[in-house]
Length: 189
Ligand SMILES: [Zn+2]
Ligand SMILES: [Zn+2]
Image (cartoon, rainbow, N blue to C red; front, side, top):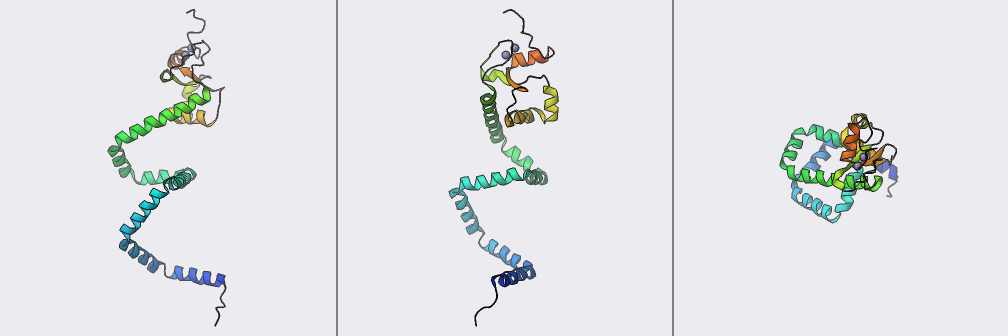
């Protein structure tokens, strides 16, 4: 006798079955997982190795879309976080250095490679350069945007040459100590 049930009927029946037997199904899944754990993990590792970039891209996309999940996970795993930090001190330091380097490179790409102070300094040795607040509102900007890194992020997210510019440490700190004007302006060299 031909099966008169429609596709939808079957889907509904299956859904009902799943709901009624959820605990049994889950139990069976757990059993199977325990039985095949090694095999499964090996398969996952192999899949990850073969599709490394695709998997990472998907993970990153998900993380960016749901930053709150990641934060929640870390909040719930404080001990793990602490232990991880302890165990990976060197690695984290290297990552931070690399990240800072990358951000600074982006910053110079956007805002120029030399001191833009009107005193005419034009210092171009990059370790001497920093992000300057042309409106002299550095303290407020940092307080409102989560410190130096937050400000850096903001300056990189949107090109804002009215607000931000590259300054050398001398001009930047000199201006801070001099009411917002570089102390070298007007001085004969
Ligand atoms: Zn300068
Ligand atoms: Zn200057």
